Image (tube, rainbow, N blue to C red; front, side, top):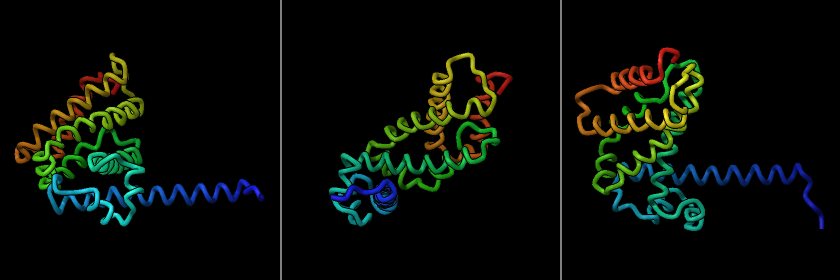
Length: 196
């Protein structure tokens, strides 16, 4: 039996990785699109796999259920925003507040559907973990030297962002995403001290 050469194996791994990424992206996009078309409670795994054009086995190889697919869709959206922010490392912001709130504003029917299904708070709490990771990575880029451990500082700021987001979702007319972005970062700078 012929053993594959490393080059052939590397090519096979690359093809497998590309296939996995393609199907994962298709599943995330399917969930995203379905959320704009119907209430979360009415979406089934069958709807997701039909829209994504993948098998049931492919779905369950990645997610346990539609709730996991929902979190992956949110994580993908947040990841895109974070990647855009991190591509501009000189930009003095910890998190993409304007982009996040603008997206939520455009997605009000989805947000209402998730709230009605009892899923919105869980998604936003999951967002605290994602935001905290991003903030902790960006603290050194901004020259911040918090008096508390960076991990705790990041979690505190991410929690404040969650509370601000929840407040704003109930009263979007009270302030614009850009104003809240400035206010959040002004508050963060006070917390981080003069070196930030």
